[in-house]
Amino acid sequence: EVQLVESGGGLVQPGGSLRLSCAASGFTFSNFWMYWVRQAPGSGLEWVANINQDGGEKYYVDSVKGRFTISRDNAKNSLYLQMNRLRAEDTAVYYCARISGPFRKYYFDYWGQGTLVTVSS
Amino acid sequence: QSVLTQPPSVSGAPGQRVTISCTGSSSNIGAGYDVHWYQQVPGTVPKLLIYGNNNRPSGVPDRFSGSKSGTSASLAITGLQAEDEADYYCQSYDSSLSGSVFGGGTKLTVL
Image (cartoon, rainbow over all chains, first blue to last red; front, side):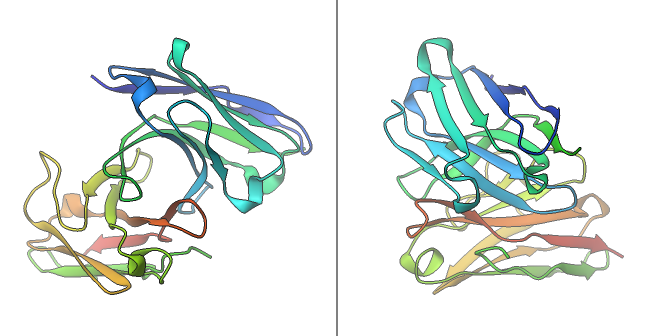
């Protein structure tokens, strides 16, 4: 059974940092692109960052470029999101998600339960 | 503002048919990239409903169907049931962003 379990969320002051983790199991982690998707309270879904199978390709939504870093450790079946210089507008539930399907036609077939990040003083 | 545009809300009575539209542009839906749909009951994780424009994962009732034409796509739900009340999101790939994009979501109310 595919499982994605996020951790690392919490309350942080503006300008602070957090590192999210996602532990994957039930599939060959190193074979899949992985994503972080977030959902602000009462809002829709937003792609944050993605990373290819070996970590050599990474892409970010403009609003987090230069502040967030996505990474993975295939030996540990884990995905990470280092979030620096956090802002109030980064407050959201952050989901780790696996994609499946053809290149550029992929979809999110498995999601973690999410971890809440609250940026507030 | 989301890259893909959906109506904020739709409603229908039990047994009726409703459709939810999703409008994109030449860098996403119009470029030929597939559209996928997710259902999210408030407080829960999004669930894949339709993939590859019109395919249902195992376990999704055939009351749900998808279509795509040009720069737009639609999700149709027939035989509305109370349990269908949820938020629905479309998703595609955007070549100008090198990542996935979502619609803003549509809240379905079953009257």
